Image 1 (cartoon, rainbow, N blue to C red):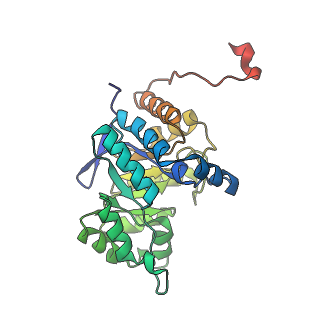
Image 2: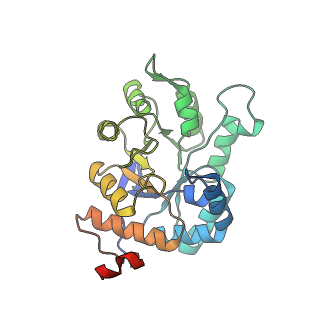
Image 3: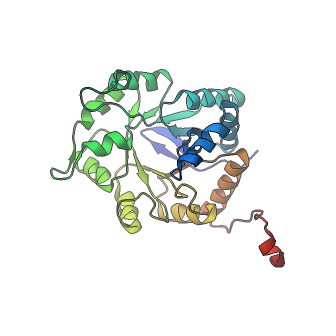
Length: 278
C-alpha cells in the first residue's frame, strides 16, 4: 500500500492536503489556445479517471473544478474503481446580474452541484472578484449566495485571485469555511508580490486551498512544490493538476518527500546534453 497523504479538516470535513486539480483535464492551460486544444483532444473520461485513481492510491480523495459533466463522469468512474467516495469541491460560475444566460441562474447552478454530490461549493473567481468592493472593504451579495449553498446541504467557500477577498471575508465574517487563493514561486497570475500573498494565507482565519503551485507548467515540480509546501500552514492545502498517471505519481512522491523534510530522490529526465553527468 502506498503512503497515505497527510490530511487537514475544513468545515468539519477531513480533506487530504493535496487536492486534485482539473485544468489539465479540461483544457485550461494558461499557455495558448493550441495547448488548450491539445489537452481537450488528449483527455478522455477514461484517462481522467485513471489519473484520479493514482491520487486515490495515496488517500488523495478530493477533486476541485467546475461543475462539468466530463469531470463528474470521470470522478464517478474513479469512485467505482476504488470503491471509495471522492469529495467534490466545485467552483461554479453563475449570473450575478440580470439578463445572463438562463442556464447560469445561481439556483440552477447550485442545484446541479448538489445533485452531483458536491461537499464544497465555492463561487469561482469570476463571481467573487466581481463582487469585491475595495472602497467599502466588503464582498457584496456573497451572503446571498452562501445561504443558497447552505440550503442545498453544501459547505460554502470562495475562490479568488484578489488577496483582498480573503481579508474582507475574514473582517466581515461572511459564511465561508475555506478560501481558494493563487500561490506559486513565480508570482504567476498573482496581483501583488509573493510575500504579500504568503502573509495573507498565513493570517487567514480559515484553511486555504492554494492553486497553480507550478504556475501552469512554468515551474519544475521540485521548485514549485518545495516553495509552496514550505511556506503554508499545516491546515492549508495545495491543488495540483496533472496530465497523466505517471505525472500524478511523480508529483505526489516529490510532495511526500518534501513534507518529510527529505530531499526527493526520483528518476531524472535524460537528454544528450546531460550525458556527461551520468
